[in-house]
Amino acid sequence: MSAFARTVRYANPSALHAERIDMLMLNVGLRCDQRCAHCHQSSSPGRSEVMSRDVMQTIVAVAGEVRPLLVDITGGAPELNPDIRYLLRLLHDAGLPVRLRTNLTALLTPEAAGLIGVLAEYRVALLASLPAMDPEELATQGRGPLDRSLESLRSLTDAGYGSDPRLRLDIAVNRSASALEETPAEVESRFRKELADRLGIRFNDLLLITNVPVGRFRDHLHGDRRLDSYLEELREAFNPETLSHLACRTCISVAWDGTLWDCDFNLGHGITLSHGLPSHIADFDVSVLANRPVRFAEHCFACTAMAGSG
Image 1 (cartoon, rainbow, N blue to C red):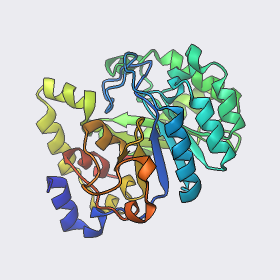
Image 2: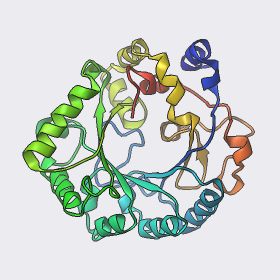
Image 3: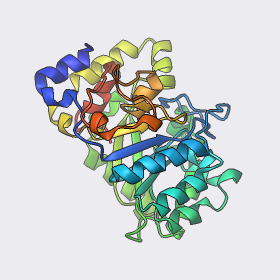
């Protein structure tokens, strides 16, 4: 049993198991136009993993039976999956609520030409990653130029995102353990002042996501000999009150190849579902998976630090 699982067992034993499946998270591929330092999937322009139409069809069939409250699409940059419009249409026709996670700059690539209009037509909610409003800070994180992200946000504002109640736009801000002292309210106030007040870019909510020590970010920490200290900071920031709303308790992830995972971070770290559980979307059994034992590891402390992640 991992140190995190032991902590959970002591603080709230019920959190060792899932409760239900309210959300399906779909990782539709690892290709990305960026190479972010905090990426737990180590995504980049050179990755070739991609979800096929066959897997998409099976997912939509399962989702039609399970009726999750949300189908959450991620990557990589999901905009770069050549069949993303096909998937969005299937989900829309099935009457399923959808959110797409975007790094913003992928919406400006040739592959995503016209996609904002499709997203608006299908009423797809967006969770846009914008780790910082300082160009130099973004550059240190491996992100593209700030003006490209702002250009994309202006296009979304023009399409009605953030103002039309049917077009939700939330901003996700990644932060390291060392930045945990800044409260969510302080971060949101700073971003609203910059985006809404100064630039006229509208958004709904701001979500804080603690950088998870998985994938490329873990490699960076290890290379800088900071992995142990970072993990210790996360452990010290553990908040038992976050256990009642851990995403893995109400969500299950589907990878590009149709395999099932407790969460996208476990996918990035290669931690499979507990032995004996259905492991592929083709074998999905909600009666078994909805209350499955969740597999935890040390990186899970990122989701319970301070007020939680996301």
